[in-house]
Amino acid sequence: MITKNQNILYFSLLIIALFLEPWGNTSFAQGDTSYAPANTNSPDSVTVNNIFIVGNVKTKKSVILRELDFTTDFYYDWNTFLEILIADQKKIYNLRLFTSVEITPLITSDREVEILITVKERWYILPQIIFQLADRNFSEWWTNQNRDFSRVNYGLRLSHSNVGGRNEKLKFAGQLGFTKAIDLQYSKPYIDKNQKHGLAAQLTFKENKTIPIKSEFNKQVFYTNENEDIIKKNFAAALRYTYRRSYYNYHFLTLGYSGTRVANDALIENPDYFQHGGNKLRYFYATYTFRHDRRDNVSYATDGELLQLSITKYGIVYTEELDEVEVNLTANKYFKLSDKFHFNTGLTADWFLSKSQPYTLVRGIGYNPNFIRGYELNVVEGQQLYVHKNSFRWKFVDWEIDISNLVQLEQFSTIPIRLYLSANFDHGYVKDRNHIPENSRLANKYLMGYGTGIDLVGFYDSVLRFEYSLNNRNEGNFFFNFSSPF
Image (cartoon, rainbow, N blue to C red; front, side, top):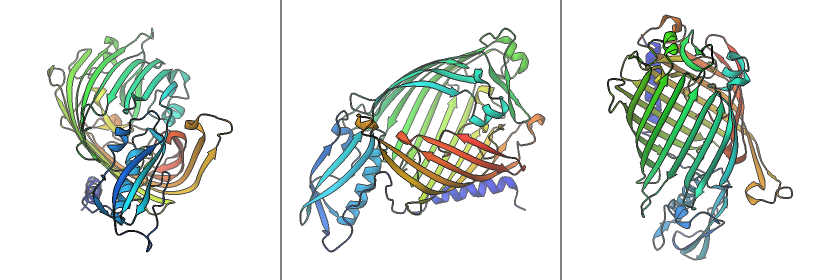
C-alpha cells in the first residue's frame, strides 16, 4: 500500500529526474529578437570580427563581455551560433542592470559577422519608502491579524545597484514600526581579473516589542508584555564568498554570526524558545550552497531551470547553545510551451537532523517560500518538509506603454504590463517528530491546494498575484501576494 508520505517522495524523484534529461532549446521572451530566419542566404558557419556595445553609459564593458559564450577568431556553426546569442541575451538581462537587451549579428561577408549589443540601463540609485507588512503574507495580516496597521514596517531604503559600473550593490535600510531594524549590505560580484570570485557582506540589527512565540492549532501565537517593552533583540553579521566557474553554476560559502536576546517573561510563554532554558542564543554558522540557474528571467521565469542545494552547520563555536545541521533542496523546471503558454513545476525540501530546534530556526509550510496555495492562513511546523508546486499559465496581455512624452528619463520612458491567467496545484507534507497535539490537524498530514489566479508582471519585473484557492480541507479564500510563487 502506498502511503501519502511516499507520494511526496515519488513526486520528489520525478522532479529530480527532470534534471537528468537533456534540456530542450530555449527562446527569450524579454525583448525577443529574430536572428535572420533560416533561409538559403544564411551562412553555414561564421566567425566574429568585432563586438560593439551601445547604451552602457554607466556599466563597464567587461561586465557585459563576461556573460558572452563566444569569442572572436573562432568559427561557429550558424544555427549553434544563434542559440548562443539567445542564451547570452538572457544572461545579460538577468544581471538586472538593464530594462532591455538586444544582441544583433551583422553579416559583413560570407563567413564573417560583427555583433551589436544594445542595452537600456535601469535607474541604479533608488531611494525607496519602506511600507510593508510584518506578517508572513497579506492574507495572514488581513484575516488572522484583523488588518492591524500597527503590524506594518515603515522607513527608508537607499540602494545603488551598480556601484562603479561593475554590478556592485550597496544597500542601506532604516526601518521603524513593528520591527525596528538597521540593515547594511555590500556585494562585489567579481574581485579578480578573470571575474570568477566575489565577496559580499551584511550587518543587521533588529528589535521587536511583539514576537511569534509559538504556534497553536496551526496558527502563530504572538506575545507582547504589559508594558510593551522591547522583548527581542538580534544582531547578525555574514560574509559570503562566491565562485562562478561557468556561466550557470555558482558556489557560495557563507560564514556568519547571530546573537539573539529575549526578555525573561517571554520564556514564561514558551520555556523552550531557545531550548537551553536561557534568554540568549548565540552561534556562528557556515553554509555551503550550490546553485545551477538557467532561468530566462530570475524575477518571473517562464523558461529554463533552477537547482539549488545548501547545507548549513549551526554552532561552530558556542555549541552548548546550538549544534544543528540543516539541508535544503530546491528544484524548479520552467517549460515554455509557446510564447503565450507556460508550465512551471518546482520541488522544495528541507531537513533538520535533530528532533527539535530553537523557535527562531523553526521551518515549515507557511513560511516563505514554503507555502501551499489554500493554506496561506496556516503554519505547519516540523523538522522535515516537502512542497511540490505547479502552475499552468496563459499570457493574455503583453503591453509596453510609451510615456516618453510625460517622463523625460529614458529609464522610465516605457511601462511594461504582462498579465497571466494561472491554474495552480500544490501539495506537500510536514513531518513533526514531536507530534505536538495542538498542531496535529495539519502536521504529519498530506496537504493539497488548487485554484486559479491572475499574475501581473510590471515595471522592473515587479510581480502582483491575485488568486482564489481551495485546500483538501474544503477551505477556500482569495489570496494576494507580491512575488512569484517559485
